[in-house]
Length: 299
Image (cartoon, rainbow, N blue to C red; front, top):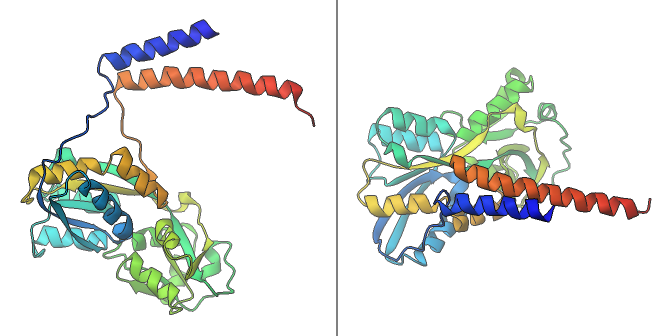
Protein backbone atom coordinates (compact mmCIF):
# COMPACT_ATOMS: atom_id res chain seq x y z
CA UNK A 1 0.00 0.00 0.00
CA UNK A 2 2.84 2.41 0.89
CA UNK A 3 4.60 1.61 -2.38
CA UNK A 4 1.47 2.33 -4.44
CA UNK A 5 0.88 5.54 -2.52
CA UNK A 6 4.44 6.74 -3.14
CA UNK A 7 4.08 5.84 -6.81
CA UNK A 8 0.93 7.95 -7.05
CA UNK A 9 2.68 10.90 -5.46
CA UNK A 10 5.62 10.49 -7.79
CA UNK A 11 3.32 10.41 -10.81
CA UNK A 12 1.60 13.56 -9.66
CA UNK A 13 4.95 15.24 -9.06
CA UNK A 14 6.01 14.43 -12.61
CA UNK A 15 2.85 16.00 -13.98
CA UNK A 16 3.39 19.06 -11.87
CA UNK A 17 7.05 19.16 -12.91
CA UNK A 18 6.11 19.48 -16.55
CA UNK A 19 4.53 22.82 -15.71
CA UNK A 20 0.96 21.61 -15.98
CA UNK A 21 0.14 23.39 -12.71
CA UNK A 22 2.39 26.20 -11.64
CA UNK A 23 2.02 28.57 -8.74
CA UNK A 24 2.00 32.17 -9.95
CA UNK A 25 4.90 34.15 -8.50
CA UNK A 26 4.08 37.18 -6.42
CA UNK A 27 3.89 40.24 -8.64
CA UNK A 28 5.61 43.51 -7.87
CA UNK A 29 3.52 46.60 -7.25
CA UNK A 30 3.72 47.90 -10.81
CA UNK A 31 0.12 49.01 -11.41
CA UNK A 32 -1.33 52.42 -10.71
CA UNK A 33 -4.21 54.68 -11.58
CA UNK A 34 -7.99 54.40 -11.20
CA UNK A 35 -10.08 51.32 -11.90
CA UNK A 36 -13.78 52.01 -12.45
CA UNK A 37 -15.97 49.00 -11.62
CA UNK A 38 -19.67 48.42 -12.23
CA UNK A 39 -20.75 45.63 -9.90
CA UNK A 40 -23.81 43.83 -8.55
CA UNK A 41 -25.24 45.41 -5.39
CA UNK A 42 -24.81 42.12 -3.54
CA UNK A 43 -21.03 42.55 -3.87
CA UNK A 44 -20.98 45.90 -2.07
CA UNK A 45 -19.20 44.81 1.11
CA UNK A 46 -16.98 42.02 -0.14
CA UNK A 47 -15.68 43.72 -3.28
CA UNK A 48 -14.44 46.64 -1.20
CA UNK A 49 -12.62 44.21 1.09
CA UNK A 50 -10.99 42.53 -1.92
CA UNK A 51 -9.94 45.92 -3.30
CA UNK A 52 -8.29 46.81 0.01
CA UNK A 53 -6.45 43.50 -0.11
CA UNK A 54 -5.25 44.21 -3.65
CA UNK A 55 -4.00 47.67 -2.66
CA UNK A 56 -1.60 46.12 -0.17
CA UNK A 57 0.63 45.19 -3.11
CA UNK A 58 -0.63 47.89 -5.49
CA UNK A 59 -1.01 51.00 -3.32
CA UNK A 60 -1.11 53.36 -6.30
CA UNK A 61 -4.32 51.79 -7.66
CA UNK A 62 -7.57 53.50 -6.70
CA UNK A 63 -11.10 52.17 -7.17
CA UNK A 64 -14.34 53.83 -8.15
CA UNK A 65 -17.35 51.54 -7.62
CA UNK A 66 -20.89 51.77 -8.89
CA UNK A 67 -23.18 49.15 -7.34
CA UNK A 68 -26.67 48.31 -8.53
CA UNK A 69 -28.85 45.85 -10.39
CA UNK A 70 -26.64 44.04 -12.89
CA UNK A 71 -29.17 44.22 -15.73
CA UNK A 72 -29.59 47.97 -15.30
CA UNK A 73 -25.83 48.56 -15.11
CA UNK A 74 -25.22 46.50 -18.25
CA UNK A 75 -27.91 48.47 -20.08
CA UNK A 76 -26.15 51.72 -19.16
CA UNK A 77 -22.93 50.45 -20.73
CA UNK A 78 -24.68 49.19 -23.86
CA UNK A 79 -26.55 52.47 -24.34
CA UNK A 80 -23.47 54.53 -23.53
CA UNK A 81 -25.10 56.42 -20.68
CA UNK A 82 -22.41 55.63 -18.12
CA UNK A 83 -20.77 58.98 -17.19
CA UNK A 84 -17.22 57.58 -17.04
CA UNK A 85 -15.49 54.75 -18.95
CA UNK A 86 -15.95 51.43 -17.13
CA UNK A 87 -12.94 49.17 -16.72
CA UNK A 88 -14.50 46.04 -15.16
CA UNK A 89 -18.03 44.69 -15.02
CA UNK A 90 -18.71 42.26 -12.14
CA UNK A 91 -22.16 40.83 -12.60
CA UNK A 92 -24.56 38.38 -11.04
CA UNK A 93 -26.33 36.22 -13.65
CA UNK A 94 -24.89 35.32 -17.02
CA UNK A 95 -27.45 37.34 -18.98
CA UNK A 96 -25.94 40.84 -18.41
CA UNK A 97 -22.49 39.61 -19.44
CA UNK A 98 -23.99 37.79 -22.43
CA UNK A 99 -25.68 41.01 -23.52
CA UNK A 100 -22.46 43.00 -23.18
CA UNK A 101 -20.55 40.36 -25.12
CA UNK A 102 -23.17 40.37 -27.89
CA UNK A 103 -22.80 44.17 -28.07
CA UNK A 104 -19.00 43.75 -28.42
CA UNK A 105 -18.38 45.63 -25.17
CA UNK A 106 -16.20 42.97 -23.49
CA UNK A 107 -12.64 41.81 -24.02
CA UNK A 108 -13.77 38.17 -24.46
CA UNK A 109 -10.70 36.39 -23.09
CA UNK A 110 -11.04 38.26 -19.78
CA UNK A 111 -14.53 36.91 -19.04
CA UNK A 112 -14.62 34.47 -16.12
CA UNK A 113 -17.06 32.82 -13.72
CA UNK A 114 -16.10 33.38 -10.09
CA UNK A 115 -18.84 32.73 -7.52
CA UNK A 116 -22.16 31.07 -6.79
CA UNK A 117 -24.92 32.21 -4.44
CA UNK A 118 -28.36 31.08 -3.27
CA UNK A 119 -31.71 32.72 -2.54
CA UNK A 120 -33.08 33.33 0.94
CA UNK A 121 -36.56 34.37 2.08
CA UNK A 122 -36.15 36.86 4.90
CA UNK A 123 -38.50 38.49 7.41
CA UNK A 124 -37.97 41.31 9.95
CA UNK A 125 -36.06 40.20 13.03
CA UNK A 126 -39.13 40.62 15.27
CA UNK A 127 -41.57 38.92 12.87
CA UNK A 128 -43.69 36.02 14.07
CA UNK A 129 -44.46 34.83 10.53
CA UNK A 130 -43.59 31.19 9.95
CA UNK A 131 -42.43 30.24 6.45
CA UNK A 132 -41.69 26.62 5.59
CA UNK A 133 -42.37 26.75 1.84
CA UNK A 134 -42.58 29.26 -0.99
CA UNK A 135 -46.38 28.86 -0.90
CA UNK A 136 -46.41 30.35 2.62
CA UNK A 137 -45.74 33.75 1.02
CA UNK A 138 -49.24 33.87 -0.47
CA UNK A 139 -51.15 35.05 2.66
CA UNK A 140 -48.70 37.93 3.21
CA UNK A 141 -49.70 41.47 2.27
CA UNK A 142 -46.32 42.67 0.98
CA UNK A 143 -43.40 40.63 -0.36
CA UNK A 144 -40.35 42.51 -1.68
CA UNK A 145 -38.21 41.33 -4.59
CA UNK A 146 -35.80 43.09 -6.91
CA UNK A 147 -37.37 44.61 -10.02
CA UNK A 148 -36.97 41.83 -12.62
CA UNK A 149 -36.46 44.43 -15.37
CA UNK A 150 -33.14 45.54 -13.87
CA UNK A 151 -32.29 43.15 -11.02
CA UNK A 152 -31.28 39.50 -11.58
CA UNK A 153 -32.42 38.62 -8.05
CA UNK A 154 -35.91 39.60 -9.14
CA UNK A 155 -35.63 37.30 -12.16
CA UNK A 156 -34.58 34.43 -9.90
CA UNK A 157 -37.46 35.22 -7.53
CA UNK A 158 -39.96 35.08 -10.41
CA UNK A 159 -38.52 31.70 -11.41
CA UNK A 160 -39.00 30.59 -7.82
CA UNK A 161 -42.66 31.62 -7.88
CA UNK A 162 -43.33 30.01 -11.27
CA UNK A 163 -41.72 26.71 -10.31
CA UNK A 164 -43.65 26.71 -7.01
CA UNK A 165 -46.97 27.23 -8.79
CA UNK A 166 -47.79 30.62 -7.23
CA UNK A 167 -46.64 33.05 -9.93
CA UNK A 168 -50.09 34.37 -10.80
CA UNK A 169 -51.41 34.63 -7.25
CA UNK A 170 -48.46 36.46 -5.71
CA UNK A 171 -47.95 39.22 -8.29
CA UNK A 172 -50.45 41.70 -6.70
CA UNK A 173 -48.60 41.45 -3.38
CA UNK A 174 -45.11 42.19 -4.73
CA UNK A 175 -43.12 45.31 -3.87
CA UNK A 176 -40.28 45.91 -6.34
CA UNK A 177 -36.92 47.09 -5.02
CA UNK A 178 -34.20 48.84 -7.03
CA UNK A 179 -31.68 46.12 -6.09
CA UNK A 180 -31.21 43.42 -3.45
CA UNK A 181 -29.89 45.89 -0.88
CA UNK A 182 -33.05 47.93 -1.32
CA UNK A 183 -35.10 44.77 -0.70
CA UNK A 184 -32.99 44.07 2.38
CA UNK A 185 -33.72 47.59 3.64
CA UNK A 186 -37.47 47.22 3.03
CA UNK A 187 -37.52 44.09 5.18
CA UNK A 188 -35.24 45.38 7.93
CA UNK A 189 -37.36 48.53 8.25
CA UNK A 190 -40.59 46.49 8.57
CA UNK A 191 -41.95 48.08 5.41
CA UNK A 192 -42.85 44.64 4.03
CA UNK A 193 -43.69 41.28 5.55
CA UNK A 194 -40.97 39.34 3.76
CA UNK A 195 -38.43 39.65 0.97
CA UNK A 196 -36.26 37.54 -1.30
CA UNK A 197 -32.56 38.33 -1.41
CA UNK A 198 -29.32 36.45 -1.85
CA UNK A 199 -28.13 34.53 1.19
CA UNK A 200 -24.99 36.66 1.37
CA UNK A 201 -27.11 39.82 1.68
CA UNK A 202 -29.16 38.33 4.49
CA UNK A 203 -25.96 37.43 6.36
CA UNK A 204 -24.91 41.08 6.45
CA UNK A 205 -27.97 42.11 8.47
CA UNK A 206 -28.81 39.31 10.88
CA UNK A 207 -29.33 41.90 13.60
CA UNK A 208 -32.28 43.30 11.61
CA UNK A 209 -33.63 40.37 9.58
CA UNK A 210 -33.80 36.62 9.87
CA UNK A 211 -33.63 33.91 7.25
CA UNK A 212 -37.10 32.43 7.48
CA UNK A 213 -36.71 29.88 4.70
CA UNK A 214 -34.08 28.72 2.21
CA UNK A 215 -35.80 27.57 -1.00
CA UNK A 216 -34.50 24.48 -2.83
CA UNK A 217 -31.94 25.50 -5.45
CA UNK A 218 -33.67 23.43 -8.14
CA UNK A 219 -36.52 25.98 -8.18
CA UNK A 220 -34.40 28.66 -9.89
CA UNK A 221 -31.45 28.91 -12.26
CA UNK A 222 -27.88 28.71 -10.90
CA UNK A 223 -26.79 32.06 -9.50
CA UNK A 224 -23.40 32.73 -11.08
CA UNK A 225 -21.21 35.80 -10.60
CA UNK A 226 -18.78 36.63 -13.38
CA UNK A 227 -16.51 39.46 -14.43
CA UNK A 228 -14.79 40.83 -17.51
CA UNK A 229 -12.70 43.77 -18.64
CA UNK A 230 -14.50 46.18 -20.96
CA UNK A 231 -13.14 47.43 -24.27
CA UNK A 232 -13.69 51.01 -23.10
CA UNK A 233 -11.17 50.62 -20.25
CA UNK A 234 -8.76 53.52 -19.79
CA UNK A 235 -6.41 51.48 -17.61
CA UNK A 236 -6.21 48.09 -19.36
CA UNK A 237 -3.13 46.65 -17.63
CA UNK A 238 -4.36 47.37 -14.11
CA UNK A 239 -7.90 46.31 -15.03
CA UNK A 240 -6.70 42.96 -16.39
CA UNK A 241 -4.53 42.37 -13.33
CA UNK A 242 -7.28 43.14 -10.84
CA UNK A 243 -9.77 41.08 -12.85
CA UNK A 244 -7.38 38.12 -12.54
CA UNK A 245 -6.92 38.87 -8.84
CA UNK A 246 -10.65 38.32 -8.30
CA UNK A 247 -9.98 34.60 -8.83
CA UNK A 248 -6.93 34.49 -6.57
CA UNK A 249 -6.99 32.37 -3.40
CA UNK A 250 -6.82 35.55 -1.30
CA UNK A 251 -9.85 37.12 -2.96
CA UNK A 252 -11.87 33.91 -3.04
CA UNK A 253 -11.17 33.51 0.67
CA UNK A 254 -12.80 36.87 1.35
CA UNK A 255 -15.85 35.98 -0.75
CA UNK A 256 -16.16 32.58 0.92
CA UNK A 257 -16.13 34.05 4.43
CA UNK A 258 -19.04 36.26 3.34
CA UNK A 259 -21.09 33.24 2.26
CA UNK A 260 -20.32 33.02 -1.46
CA UNK A 261 -19.24 29.70 -2.98
CA UNK A 262 -16.15 29.99 -5.19
CA UNK A 263 -16.39 28.31 -8.59
CA UNK A 264 -13.36 26.04 -9.15
CA UNK A 265 -11.13 27.21 -11.98
CA UNK A 266 -11.06 24.78 -14.93
CA UNK A 267 -7.92 22.67 -14.81
CA UNK A 268 -5.78 21.35 -17.62
CA UNK A 269 -5.91 17.62 -18.39
CA UNK A 270 -2.51 16.96 -16.87
CA UNK A 271 -3.35 18.90 -13.74
CA UNK A 272 -6.63 17.02 -13.35
CA UNK A 273 -4.82 13.70 -13.67
CA UNK A 274 -2.20 14.68 -11.10
CA UNK A 275 -4.69 15.93 -8.55
CA UNK A 276 -7.03 13.05 -9.31
CA UNK A 277 -4.35 10.45 -8.59
CA UNK A 278 -3.43 11.99 -5.26
CA UNK A 279 -7.09 12.47 -4.37
CA UNK A 280 -7.91 8.85 -5.14
CA UNK A 281 -5.05 7.53 -3.03
CA UNK A 282 -5.90 9.84 -0.14
CA UNK A 283 -9.52 8.67 -0.33
CA UNK A 284 -8.35 5.04 -0.15
CA UNK A 285 -6.14 5.84 2.80
CA UNK A 286 -9.03 7.47 4.68
CA UNK A 287 -11.27 4.50 3.85
CA UNK A 288 -8.72 2.05 5.26
CA UNK A 289 -8.46 4.07 8.46
CA UNK A 290 -12.24 4.25 8.74
CA UNK A 291 -12.55 0.47 8.42
CA UNK A 292 -9.89 -0.05 11.07
CA UNK A 293 -11.76 2.25 13.45
CA UNK A 294 -15.03 0.47 12.72
CA UNK A 295 -13.60 -2.79 13.98
CA UNK A 296 -13.05 -1.36 17.44
CA UNK A 297 -16.07 0.89 17.56
CA UNK A 298 -18.47 0.35 20.43
CA UNK A 299 -22.24 0.60 19.67
